[in-house]
Length: 227
Length: 227
DNA sequence: CGAATAGTGTCTCTGAGACATTATAGG
DNA sequence: CCTATAATGTCTCAGAGACACTATTCG
Image (cartoon, rainbow over all chains, first blue to last red; front, side, top):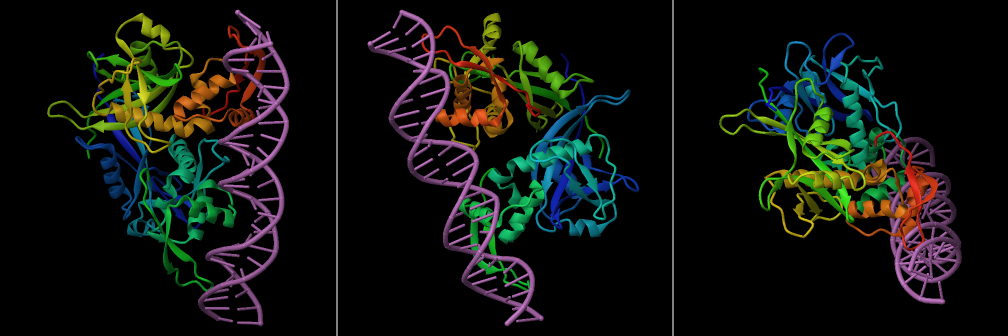
């Protein structure tokens, strides 16, 4: 068997929590159409380095936690060579989507609607913050569904949730992240106990400001391996 | 950025449970050295089809459940192009390793030794059934570690364990699979309750034969989506 | 009947949901 | 004092570990 040549494409999924729901940054491709940001792998580049470079070019967020999702081969269509696409999830903390969205109009903020419960799996829908459905290229809805499935599965044993929060956060913010990803409402006392019992959190002693009610305490995430 | 050309390699990890421990089939590369079976992606081939073809060529087992594991780019070393390697896990049921091992001497049966507990992650060691350590190419121990991590993580919510068992099996065999993958001993009554409560199993009414003691009932796995 | 393993009943402990109660900020 | 939310105490229930016990097959 001889080694054939292929093109290598990376698809990056910039994800964050915006207004209490899971949101992604998409490249505008038309009026009500958008697509995942993509780019080509460079020679001598690792996959993660390429994903980070493409994210900076297409959706320049200040910081993101990257995790490889899935790879697939798109068989050659007539002329061109077969393309290998490697999908990466980029978890953006806090309100990191605000800056790239203001910087230009190439990007579209999209809300992710998960039409299945638990860890069933399958494609998801996306719409604008106003509720208008967005059209995606074939395959992108499945990739986004895989990303949601991965997030739901890793949420309560791996600390991916903290990649979506700022350095210091309240337990209510942490619960909002979990509820947005899981798509269910959680019990507050039980959630607090479970999080604190894991030993991943350190109280800072400081409290949030600007609230017109009792301010919540701010916590830090004690980084563990495996994100 | 122009699209560059890369070579695409698939690495397949044939895994099974042999004598109560996790075992892999490796290609012999020397006296005490072995490597994961690999092959090139063909034009117009999907990744899973290529992995299945390579498995048939390198380690011809009768049946295997395939699952994509991870992809990485090996930067070009001087002359050749950058290689993209996509790793697949092939779960082989029952004693499916027996036939390919007898068919030739290109293959080595190796036992996987996991030096970390739980879902810590990291490279693993391999040795012959006799206990002799086997040398692996750089990176292969990490890929095998990722495979073990994936198996441990998916074991109790996804039914991957059943891909390592024959069509009909006893609850003791199922428990042996779980104990081999998790590397811990499990409580029998609790394990039985948990498995039966999931609703994934159907009793066949038949019992195993050949035992010199009370024969156990045989169960079937009620296939669910997501393997 | 003895040996070996299959399969079950029961106690206990832990973790989580539900609900009520107390605490603390601004207006 | 009122309101809204933070934070906690307590009851209850479900799931799992531990352990002992019964059941069934072969020799």
